[in-house]
Image (tube, rainbow, N blue to C red):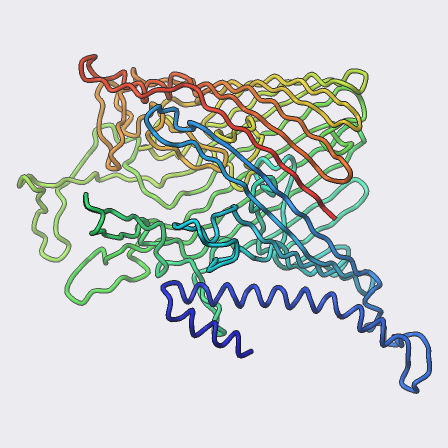
Length: 597
């Protein structure tokens, strides 16, 4: 105890004292729980050898709640090491963007079943990059010297079978995955993975299964026991640092001063097992975000404060409805016959919480902007009157996505397959429809190639693949992908749904003939200058299990298309002023070594 008190006092004197103390206590708590779980069965086993009379006998469990800990108790874990190299992902010659790292993920936990219907599971996970924690400017720090550890709980849930009639209930931090993981996945291949703080309800029969859940994605309120939330309007993040030429004077600004306060994820996923040749899924997924306040009151007079009515965005509710059909019912995306197929379609609707100028107002009716207190007209820097559009409309989600893949397996040794995927993009980001499909919490790896540079958003993808099965010697997969934009005006989104703004030809302003500069410094090209082709990708992936250890080796070669090349090649300037910087080739290579018990 004295050690922890001394460590806490020292950490408070340091620059990152509070964070270090929190990490120390979280690690101590997790390890204490695990040690208790390990020690309790042993103590129970020792006490089972004697009763209250001091005679040898079995452990007394008359009430049914004191069953022996060893019954239904198991331990589990996993170790994953992943060297990875990615080169030239921005397709520019002049930038130093060759990234190489070794990722490490270690999991350790226990699971206990009691009273035959209740199960508790806890999994601790340590995730880090070799040399990244602590990181050493001098190269002299060791692996655990002054480090900020990356230990957390991956799972911590309590499950009850048939708690509410025929309905099972699971509460706590848990892993969710449905279908092929295109919208809700584990992201397990990565170095961290994904979990949800969720209340989950399930009903299951021989032909029908349904999951209903509600998850908390963001919570602004802290409890009164010292658990301080890291999100909300008072927790600014994404800091931007700007320094002068000497690097001795810097300014720090919050990139998102008004954080999202509360957010929730709800869903209903239905599975119909009609036969071993046909499964059908139907689902609803909802993401609900609280409104965001403005930084200052809309009507700003002396002494005014921000109220709940001062909002920069109203409530954001995204609803996804979809269906999936497949004959790949034998596990690992295999069918009981040589021919396998899967199709999935999703449609998104809802309200974004933003207002746009009315798309039907072709006359663009405007009135002068006035000061809300004095009524005087507002002027711009040149002394000209500022106008505002009269007619507004709520921006709505209106997007879709479709995927189909099929293949045939010959003699259990080779599979020939193909895939087609499309996800809508937004042809006009200034109208009342948000048409870019959102891929939510998708698995981020090997969806549209193992380079992971493309998500299920604003894309049309076509693929051919060939897989060889070598039995105990693993399998080898060769894959070709060609990916275009669905809408040329929209941007390029990576596997996790992040917009790579300015990396391709795009247009926010949606002008037909003139290029314009956007507020973020990027350029909205005229419609005639836009390109659609994103990239071609050639993949080689080998996987094998040897002595219980999983090995994976992957290589991807990516060749950028004209939508990227037109920007990096600087083709829209006059020849005498161009500064071409386009290198069309990028590559990625990785190896995964994983052991589970």
